[in-house]
Image (cartoon, rainbow, N blue to C red; front, side, top):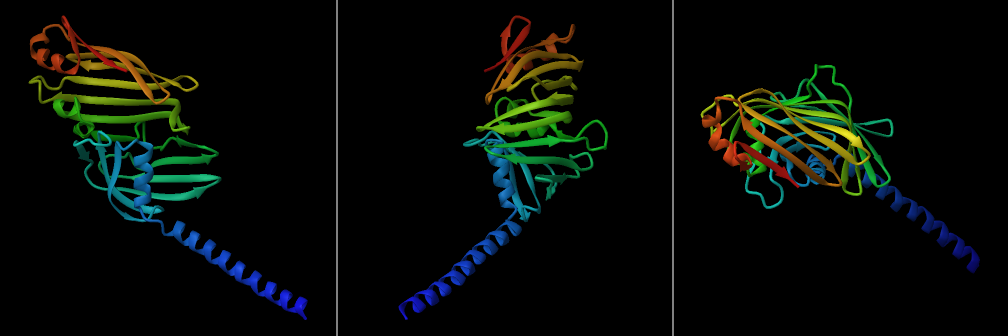
Length: 273
């Protein structure tokens, strides 16, 4: 008799446990399906160490929009927003996710980012978008959100991003890269110089060895001549470059050269790290 009662009790417990487990799984699926767009904002802030923010988010993490803001990071009082709204759609692709982003002001067609999560790591890749040789273009004034010296220079012009087989991988809190990334600063002008435009420049990031990327700055054209070399790896950037004035433009650029680096005669030394 006791054995029969025990079996009956166990028979009641098992369905109850399955019901609880089913409810938890259902709640988890509902949470994932209807996760708010603010989750995307949190992921972006974490990946950029608080320098790239999504504000005024709407929709869900799977289909949403927000205002993209550049800032100097935690504690910074500087921030600038891109015009209009960034719209995105996130969907499973293979064992990873495909993120498709659009923004009328700044993205060339549709930007596709493939995300592949792994054990303790996350890889992001940028396949060709088929829309030409550049992926995005933003106003140079947007850089003012990073704080000093960008907020002092108050640049105008544009910053254009292009990539070739670019892949970023986050391992143990640090980003590693392979492929090539080019940032073209086109027709730059600054409030601290009456000479406009100052010129156009290219900052290239290429893979040098595992965990180390090479930075190179070159002048494409203009009266302000910029060049330099550096490395990026282990979460640290090192760069050494110089700025000089083209012949006959020394007086017009003297004030700017005093601001952007450490003066050594006719040149201004730019050092990071």
